Length: 452
Image 1 (tube, rainbow, N blue to C red):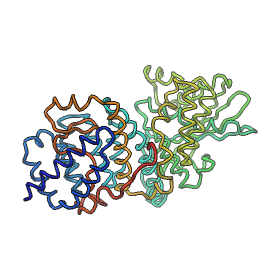
Image 2 (image 1 turned 60 degrees about the horizontal axis):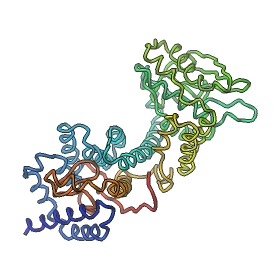
Image 3 (image 1 turned 45 degrees about the vertical axis):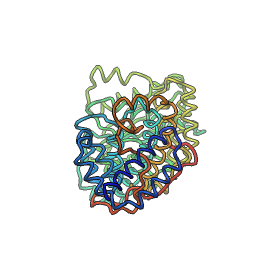
Image 4 (image 1 turned 30 degrees about the vertical axis):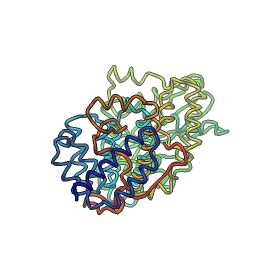
């Protein structure tokens, strides 16, 4: 009788998958969910069946998928990690391993894993994951910031990494505040250039922004010689870059403070004509490296010397986009990123911003801060499923190609999963193992539009 239940479940998953690859199969998925609820007792036996099957041994990710769907998250992690040892870069295993860690509330690990996700066959899925990475990074940064401020006394005793640096926003000293949009754009370019120096670790801008807000400095974003050391201690960075911007030409005064020594290590002043604004980031990075005593290699000098954009309007739009992003105005941010990219198609930071910006249907900043990993995981799976359906229309020839591989079904995330299938198995209510905070699929979420 158990075997019959197992076969029924597997067949239902397969039918759902084959009918759903083209973007349809809604009624089949609903039927699958109902049947799964009735036959939930057969799931553990399904796991035993898969573990013993030669096909599962060939692909550990198949067994990992079922472990994840039945709430056995630690076992799922082990299987997906084993699968990636056999096949590094496997998109299916990377995706579900990230989801498993997200259900364990390990946001950092999810970010680390999903940054390596690549899927040439299904680029829409890759884009969806990139957009959700931004949401996860924002959520993680806000959690980190709240914890850092709460544990400030404890962090004061921890010696910061001497090679880590944080870049703050430059104060706009122009009479008409016309350099406001320039502030965050400049900081983003400096951060990007500093990452090209191998001996330096750079704090991500999203993490800095979250901490500024937690410190009640989010509105102005201004840091001076008094607040810089404290900010550095909370970020775990010994070096903090801050400064000011003034007009005439564009004049940037840069100071490098030490969170460890509690003072300013050195400063530099750079002035450029407005038409040559793009020279500022590279000049500031060189001066910062000099103050830190870092000797740049020829390759690093060459990499830093490449302008991000020479179109001032593109930089202004980019700065506006970052402002909107930090305020949780996803639609506005996306529009500004695309405007910046339209002004300069060679502006890589603007293109990256447009590709990774959350959609207007994404959770607000406030709800994101309190959202559990399991709940966020459910939203992500719904969005990725929608992207799969759209991509399946584009990849209309995929079923013919996959049928030649000897497998019954395939997962659009990039790896065939045979008769197990991949989509729509709702196991809400399953008792999770000790490695998960909440059951997988905490909620059902249907996006009302495209989801980043």
